[in-house]
Image (cartoon, rainbow, N blue to C red; front, side, top):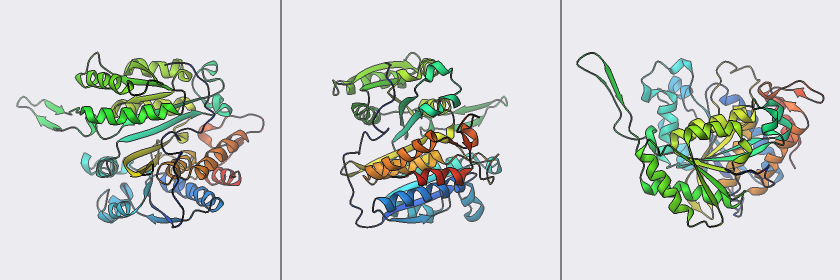
Length: 391
């Protein structure tokens, strides 16, 4: 770790911002709203995306498909064949969220998350998950972290390996033993090549930020993590301009609370990244603020096929009330413009509009604190405020 303040550049433009895809034809997007608040925030996001597209001469071909619990109810499975086919025909996937109590009684592999999201990641080889955790200066009051620790805001990028580790390792099993006890097995597997691949993503990202990478592992306990640490040290030799630090995952969780501004790029394996990125979201003030990009095979010219989604869940307790925060979904569409289409100007226009709306006092309930100039708004009103500030 090392200390730094907010970055002047927009977050996550560190891999494809120098490349450009001509908007000569419609940009093909598979739109998968999913469950819970997914359809509400997706609709709000699309109004902003289409307005930004109009400003920058872009047109979109949107193919709306069912996924998750909504697909189970209608078509009998979480990832129907026509949904997968639409994703294969698209240039990118804009994803909402899936799951909820309604489907928790199904067998694990048939539930929305394991039946749709994990297969999509595996099918498209989405190996690099980028989650920018940004605490805007105007929202530090919404952070649960002590005010002096987040004063001025912070900007941390979590680079999470997405296709290895416990989530995908085999064998997996559940066995009833002769004495009636139950034994379960999950297998954590990583190849060195997978660690090298995600390491390069993290170091390249750091080159356009504050030039510091913190690698998170559990090398004092896990053989997996010993290889992880050894490999990160090797990859770092190719980036002499980048400093590298190592933290055990439990210490990293503590340091994110104690000193969030001391991080720049954090790189870690699948399970640790899943947990730490949610922690990072909460110290910004709300999961509703955290976008993500899951990148797969390069398409050339620095662009990637990817799946772009908010990091939060379906929030069934507020679904249908029209009060969910759409910002994570809106910022995910900006990441899509950047990484899958090379439309940096359009991506930045959305990110700046979000920041301007926040600076002008617009707040959904999850980030609302009473104060002068602060206005509580619903999902549609927040999207409208952001749309009005596009430039």
